[in-house]
Image (tube, rainbow, N blue to C red; front, side):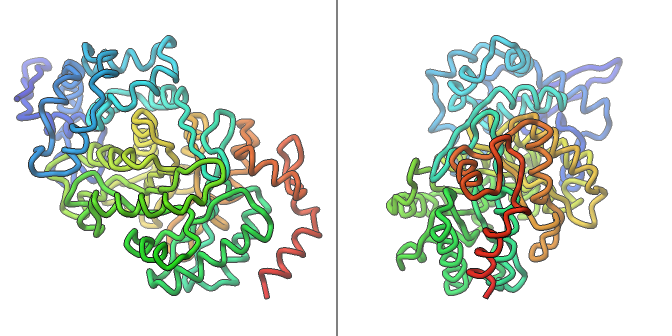
Length: 462
């Protein structure tokens, strides 16, 4: 179906829904690289006006990637909740935006319709929203998940302690873990990106983290971010796997480039769930995404990078994950050129993920050749904190020495909790207080707790 809109004396025509979505997207370098972006600001506005008049029902009848060609499209259509869709089925995209922003549209209502919203609907409405709209709606939505602690409660804010090391050196990793815990980091997960995906190295890292967790009775979960096939083998060998990680995309071809498909993810989910290692819940999956993944794999089918990104959230939603985070600036300026584009993309991703019912976090990050700096990341940190982001990364000094990119530090999480009055996950917070790391007001006292520091160092820095 073709779409059109006239501005002044010029009529803009868009050949199909995926073209309309691409032309309506806020400007970003990845869509320009793919030849999908609007050629002028006027064309973008014309596309947004036309998109505002598209009924939500259209998205159930016009797939951006054909049903027969893509298992993600089939997943989206086959799992659509037609009953809850009745609440919004009469709306256009523009009316959907207005409805989302109404005070009467509460978080409970938004949680109810999560399975009735397709990724393309979420992406479409986000293209009509200002940054403040994306913040205001996402803030309403509470997505709570549990394993050994409770993540996503309103008034709480968690972090992934990311103790990466370029050679997977146990002492270097242990030092980063101890440092992060003493800053109150790690309630979302202690998660390591391994320098190698070998079974032996990943096994060593799993055992290292599990020993530390058990030694100090820390109510959190660990994860080595290895390929899902590696994790399945680790489970077969009886290793202490808490969470199963995988990077995912929004098309079947993109996931094939990661070496995965839905069948393999099903196997991994069932295997991890069978371990029953969670104490208060069994959300066992951890997914990472990022705008531009599909384009970088030449697997985007002519669909804009943000819509592709949100389609990946349908994959995540299938497995009731504990954590999902968009690694927003990691791929580089070819896809998100500068701080402005990174900030906009992160707010879109967070909003769309929450709207689809996902426990969204963000890796607030950039590469050193992007036109961005730490001030941009500080701005995004506060925006996501206000928007109710479930978690961010905690990297020593903000500089990941293994992945060679800039992220957020333990200090950034302390800052955000302080200025917004947020607390760690409740079970983890109680542990911090028992250990003398945090007081009842939420203030850190770890640097005065010489006994705990010395005990950790003696055990883990040998």
